[in-house]
Length: 506
Length: 130
Image (cartoon, rainbow over all chains, first blue to last red):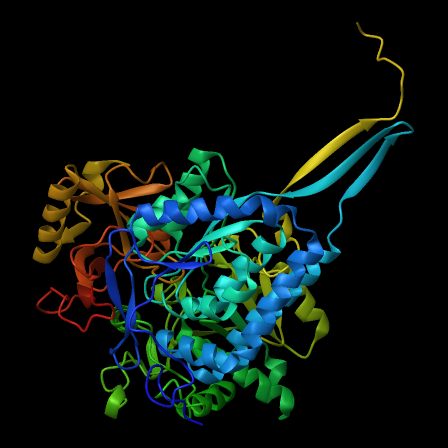
């Protein structure tokens, strides 16, 4: 099935000529009246206009969030859960519309937004609705007459800065727990993807109390900084690259507020020889598991961009994978048959091409792909890159740095010890994959890999309820799990004496 | 962070020199650069008002361009083992909190092997028009 691009006659996505910031439940024009064009990476054509806001707009958003925070924070958990469930219902009802909008703005294939991004948004809001209701404080009987009560209290107003690779899901990852814990949010979308989250806000504005979520679009150097440094936020969370992550933590330190950061990875995907012990469904799954490096065009923090393949199966296993890669369909992201869409921007595409050149320069062998993909017709100007596999060794830069494109760096290993050494020879520690029919080996490897998430005989699944976050320089904090309520609340202890006796000190 | 030993590791294209001159004029002081890694805009250099990012012993000073210091995380530097960095500009808005290199332009770093022949790379189709 082929969807009509947003805004065109017959599309499931209506598009206004211009969008505003979403502040205090209303659509508010940017203070200085400046806008910029939002383009689709599939055609390099215009979608709409979005605000090019200034710090004054962040202040308006913070005003709205602070006006809303007491009522929202004091609302019974059941009431907040009802709102989160209503958000989930509204998103579910508008699944196609949101999937098409996000696909067209980001370039990711609509088969992914229909099957993963949007359903996972629904899943996260429902999970955190449930988590909010199930949350309970603890009390401790310190002694017979002295009781410590612990209550979870919201932080108040939080700042959230999200990346371009999953514009809706990253919003949900951050908003759902923040709201569940009783906070109000000011959220800044990524510059390349400012619009699809505004379609999300249109979808949920009727079920959301004003001021609980506020969305401001604009340049990060101005409004991102104005948000992250603002003394009126009680916490800042960020997903993106490492230097901004450092700056976020620096600003948080200066305001003495907490921060959580997720900063990417260079995830190993390890295939042990026994995956080829039988030519069966599991082997087929493992082959697909390798090719998941091309999921979302490789623009994923956890992209399994390093394939570690046991040397005795390398030739045969890689041959199967290359056959499958050769069959990848690139093209119109709104065609449900398309498996690989355009990169999010021309810059991203050029960066990928330059990494392939760096790889070649270091002696990596290009097994397939390696250049811009020619997708003709209306997509001739789109930022398409061929699914690429490089063979080399782990010291090469293409094995060490996140390329954020459909580029796999493959190498071999002899035994478990070498697999582990290569897997851990990276600055990052966000994700990893282990593929084996041997349960003991899977467990031992999984525990020994220094990464926050080790997919075992699977990859790229992101269910709410499974904690996600980084080891090493991949970040601090976890997402997707009710432990996030800790990240978005503080503990109030009432230490209560039920004795009438004085201490006797004075 | 010995400046003399490492001051030769970064150079700039004419377009980058021009962008720095404009930024210096607008900011009234030098800017600074920090090479980023990781997710999203990883691999691109971030440009901030001078002194904005607190640097320390974990950072390597790659060099100085028109009075603007350019740093990289020591661990990243070791993992990349890239001797020379060329600061350039490219089309598109910057990511993170980075200052733009001009209208719809951002800074990029290139390796000498991958630098386009004519160096300035601002001619490609912009994803975001202003």
